[in-house]
Image (cartoon, rainbow, N blue to C red; front, side):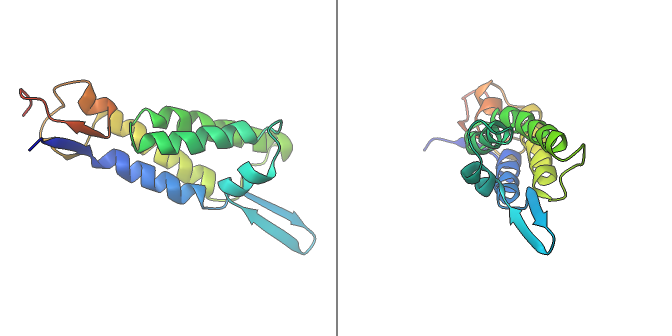
Length: 145
């Protein structure tokens, strides 16, 4: 039976990113009408030429990659500041009022932290090889603790 390592910290960050995707990223309002949009709504309702499309794609793809590798956090940590800067340029310098971007940034930091310090099943000490850091679920090599 092959032993595997599971980077639980990375999985926690990826699950937090999924929660961020379904949280409010943009609140549209006009007089008495308001509409809250999560990241899926933003991706579906904006055109590919919009300032919000690329950050949404980066974060969504980064979240999917984070279930396989902590390197997905790189795309997430690029996507969130791009989203906030696009929001600020379209909203006269204001920050988003929804919790989604902030939760997404926290998730990205957790995923990236799991690259530097993996925590979970099979990690008694520092990983022996690069696979232990780069993959969320990796085989345990013969010489590792």
